[in-house]
Amino acid sequence: MRTTLPTAAPRSSGQRFRATLLGTCMGLSVALPFASAFAQQPAANQNAAAANITQQVQTQTQAPMQSLSPIVDRVLPAVVNVSVTMKGTPAITEDDSDSEDQSGPGIQPGFPPSPFDELLRRFFEQQGIPNGGGNGGPFGQRGGPIPRGAQPKAVALGSGFIIDPSGYIVTNNHVVGQADSVTVIFQDDSKHPAKIVGRDPKTDIALLKIDAKKPLPYVQWGDSDHAKVGDWIMAVGNPFGLGGTVTTGIVSARGRDIHSGPFDDFLQLDAAINRGNSGGPTFDMQGRVVGINTAIYSPNGGSVGIGFAIPSNLAKNIVDQLKENGHVTRSWLGVQIQNVTPEIAKSLGLDPNAPKGALVAAVQDNSPAQKAGLKQGDVITSVNGHEIDKVHDLPRLVAETPVGKTLDIMVTRNGKSQQVEAKVAELKDQDRQFASNDRNGNGGGKQQQAENSAALGLQLAPLDGQMRRRLHVGKDVKGVVVAGVADDSPAAAIGLAPGDVIESVNQQPVASPDDAAAKLKDAAKQKQILLLLNRHGTNEFVGLSVENGGGNQG
Image 1: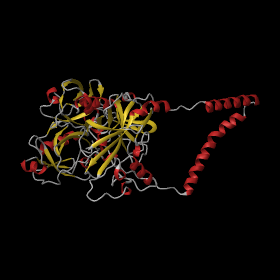
Image 2: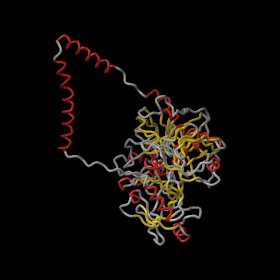
Image 3: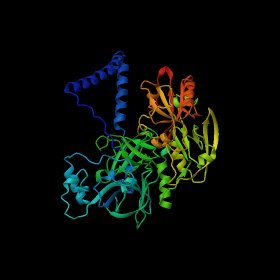
Image 4: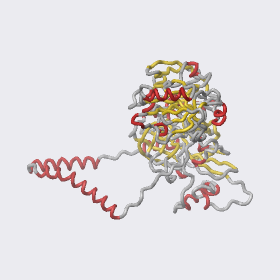
């Protein structure tokens, strides 16, 4: 996740002066009415009020400030540094170490030279890390030349935390990557070789194990579902390899999808999280782990107050499976889903002001969903009593369900609610489970317009054998091809493009260009049209509004 944000232009000295002056004026405008009211009181009342204010100020000043040191003293011994070496690969930094599939969100790999480079180079040398953390790292070029013929080692630095006194340690998958060796460093600087028990790239979680000669200090999981926006949290980790570092902040948001994997449900934090914090814990004010620090949103590679942590309730199940089996088994429903937009909600007779649920764009053959009777166009609103507010809620709930269990699924079909029971199966490598639809490309350009029909600015062509080969559309797809789109049409406004295949109009299949044109014109009288498209083999519903000749993206 390498994201660059625009930076504000520096203000002139005059601008700074005006900003300061404005603040002063605002302070005066607030203070003067109170001063006037105070002056109008009798002298005795003024003395009593002044004494009361003085007493309040003294009480507030004398009240001891709350310290987090008792929590820090309790949890810090269970937080460790994780050092990973890999042979024969380009040097990397901590958050670029996901060499397997890049599913772990990354932080920008380099920093510009700074006065701290020499300090950090000496620190790495003291830790026994060759070449200052790697040639490609922020200070790697200052670590001295590599002898000719020597095999360079890439070094990744991260964090972790002990969850079991026997030596099980949780970290991020992108920290350990394709490790040649993993070393865990405790707060007393003792070093212990670790083995990787298991990894789960989809959630970016890994489990390590060290041989403990005595019971180790450990921390307990908290309940991330009870973490509310505004709650205080504390992050502990190994930023820049500096060792146990504590930062504090609040939960800024919940349920963030940063597109790092199919089960994104991150807590957003404003505690300072930097390189090396990945894999470290986020604690609540009772010293329980409510998150695993994983990524930051940053224009420069450093903390700007937007960090992301994997919720503990998502991590616990993953860690338990890794500990027991060394891998993760997930359940599978077999539906392709997408968000319900206001335009789509209108077309389906739902409330457009509060669109919720997951719209079924396709049902896979021989899947649990097909066997349960789920249909294309259904809106899944809840699973086992858990409401589906956002589309990525569904894959997570299904994946967490034990294989073979039955899900009670509430759907809205043709404007009516009904219950469906689906017995989930194990997700295999060949099975596909979608959380949303990605739209890539432009559909292959403009097509021949022979035998075309037109409606709402669309030129429609038959989906014959030649067109199927050109668009790489399978024989199971039925419909008509969009051969052209008028620039000022409602269809153009929502992004329809040549090469899109229209399979249905208002959930009515289309058999030919004439049939599709007639259904489009008929549906336009209702001013709201629901199209089912096939784009590059992926089904997607799109809401088309024809009010005032305009259209909105569905």
